[in-house]
Length: 71
Image (cartoon, rainbow, N blue to C red; front, side):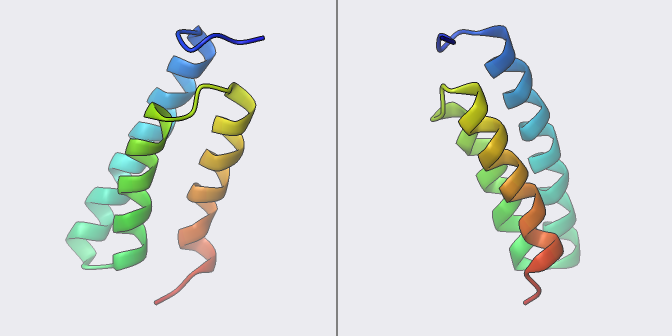
C-alpha cells in the first residue's frame, strides 16, 4: 500500500528522529542511559522500517520506554 518513498514515512521518520535527538541530548546531558539509547534508536529505526503503521507503532513504543524503565 505504501511505498518506501512515501510522504507519510518521511514525515513520521522526521518526527521520530527529532524526538530521538531530544532524548539523546537529554540522556547525554543528564548521564542517563535509557533516554540516550532510546534517542539513538529513534534516530536510526526510521531508516529500516518502510511500513507506516509499523513505524508509528515502533516509534510510540520507543518513546514510551524512558517513562516506564528507570535505571
